[in-house]
Image 1 (cartoon, rainbow, N blue to C red):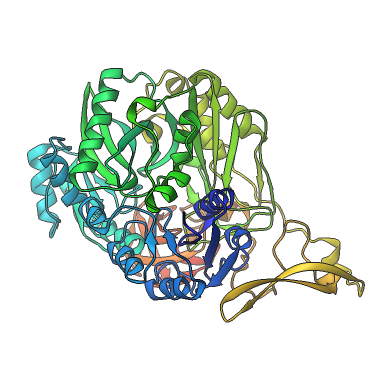
Image 2 (image 1 turned 90 degrees about the vertical axis):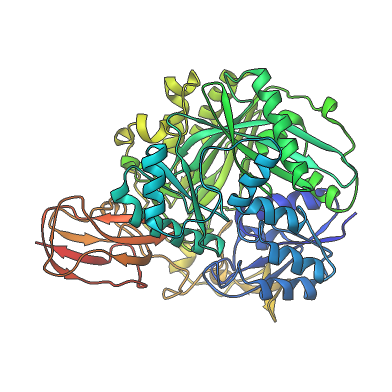
Amino acid sequence: MLNKVLVANRGEIAVRIIRTCREMGIKTVAIYSEPDRFSMHARMADEAYCIGGTTAAESYLNIEAMLDVLTRSGADAVHPGYGFFSENTDFSRAVKERGAIFVGPPPEAIETMGDKISSRIAAKAAGVDGVPGTMEAITAPEEVAVFGNEHGWPVAIKAAYGGGGRGMKVVDNSESVTEALESAKREALAYFGRDEVYMEKYLSWPRHIEMQIIVDNHGNAVWLGERDCSCQRRHQKLVEETPAPNFPQDIRNAMGEAAIRVALACGYRNAGTVEFLYQDGEFYFLEMNTRLQVEHPITELVTGVDLVALQLKVAAGEPLGFSQDDVRINGHAIEVRINAEDPARGLFLPSPGSISKLIPPGGPGVRLDSGYESGDTVSQHYDNLIAKLVVWAGDREQARNRMLRALGETYIEGVKTTIPADVLILSHPDFAAAKHSTRWVESSLNFDQLDMQEPPADTKSPDDTQGSMQLQETDITAEVQGRRYRLRMWLPISDLPAAGQSPKRSANSKSGSKKRSSDQANRSMGQASGSITAPMQGTIIKVLVEVGQEVDAGQTICVLEAMKMENMIESPTSGTVKSINVSSGDYIAAGDELAVIV
């Protein structure tokens, strides 16, 4: 059994892994960047080390910093979670070279399946066909145009080394190819460290069905049911459920067996997910995620299996201890992702900031996997997932109603969230009847009916305005040479944080956030006066207009990246560009004036 695990991740998934390790008696080591100094995962781990930096590239994608912590902490294994280094062969090999265990598949399997192009080739060799597409990386926009004209539009351009909808763009015609290709490559490079992309035909009304598999080192391979992940926006999942509704049992069995064939064909070990598109009674291989999935909790609830515990046992060389015949699916489970985004008007604008209050739901069959507590800050530099709300019930309709009840109990103050969108999805007759597809959310739902969410006015606790020299014994954390220690000290009450909050920061702290008025935060097209303001903090990726240029209402003025997502900032009116106040690479705050149209 493993003794100490370095959790090479942050947020919700790091907390999730730490909890299982604690139940198994395994010590944990956390890492954190400068913005994550007071984060929940760093507070929960047995040890925590600062790896510095602000952006993902400077911190959680810094191999040398990660390996340095591995050596200093004496951890005997590394769990990568999902995202970041979870599908990085260089990192997995480096971990092994340091004498530690990588909790995941062999690097050769990651290499084959982590590259979406080679994975399609491997799946075909295993007798599992994919969606019509290319087997090599795109080198020029003309290739996409030729493919689209031959196979039909739309065409999906996808990151070869990515997943989760990152670095994926859908183009409807040849005129849109160049811009979409550039955007896909930028997102792929920012999120996965490589910008190779490929393309495939975009099906008209498919469902996204994925199979959870796990393989040990003793020849045992099983699939643990499927998950329907068809409710998506921007090609990223919002709601997942298992079992998939209105899904034929013979197709389920065939898909599960196909998933095992794909896994064994590439020498896979540990937990993974083989994803398919299903339409008109046929299924197509989409990709394999060589890691734990965000939506793994719903599989856990219907099977009674702790997937993280299984990962750790398999990594330690232990057998699964059960066969395919032992797998039982009990009841129905649904998961919704609660992201720091404003879904009003269907824009899903990122909403980073401090969570002033978080009240979780309760009751039977309810689970909340969160990486945040009251007082924590959602940084614009990382993924904006706050929590995953998961429910279980005896059947799908009971689970749907339980989820709606649990969403109604969930209270998050300080940032805008996708909860209203989750409620809209779960309440819709199409979802209740399981008539949805991967295109359903964006083509059929009307987000205009959602209320604009008002962030609360800044408030101060009494200690912020009335100092006191009274002392109180309290537990604090201190950082020595990048390692976190817990200390017990007597401090003035006025210097202590309120219950559940992070230590106070100075007014000019870089990790603080400016208060935004609701009108600034709720639009991406600036003000009616023609002054275009930033709806969120982020980085300007590209400016698409020049001073003196004539523009139309709705025309994109610039591209703003926030939380690893590109947002098109559009002109609110037709007119002439009077001024441009930003350039590529500029970091801007919410409310900053970007340009003026007259």
